[in-house]
Length: 148
Image (cartoon, rainbow, N blue to C red):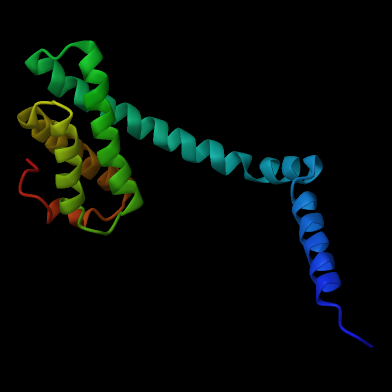
C-alpha cells in the first residue's frame, strides 16, 4: 500500500478544521460562559473597586494643584497603568518599569513633578489595598524611596 502524503495532510487539515468549528458551537460557548460567569463578574467587581480608589487618589493629587478635568483623565490613566504593572507582576520589583512609564508620560508633555506625586500616591494606595486583602506587598515596602 502506497502512502499518499497529500491525502494524509488533507485529512489532517479537515480534522483540525472540524475541531476548530466544534470549539465555537453556540451551545458550547454558552455553557462555558455560564460556568465562568460568577468568577468573571467577581474579578471585574474587584478591579472596578481598585480602579475607583486609584481614580480618587489621582483626583485628590491633581485637584490640589489645579489640573483641569480633561488633563485629570490622563493622569488617572497613568495611575491605572501603574496598577496594571502591579497586578501583572505582583512579586517583582517594578522600579525600572515605573521609570519607563514616567518617561513615556513626561514625553507626552505631562508635568514630571506631578507624575512623581501621582505615582507615590498610587503606590501608597496599592500598598493599602494589598494589606486589606492580605497580600504581600514586599516590593512596595522595600521598593522605591518615593513612597511616603
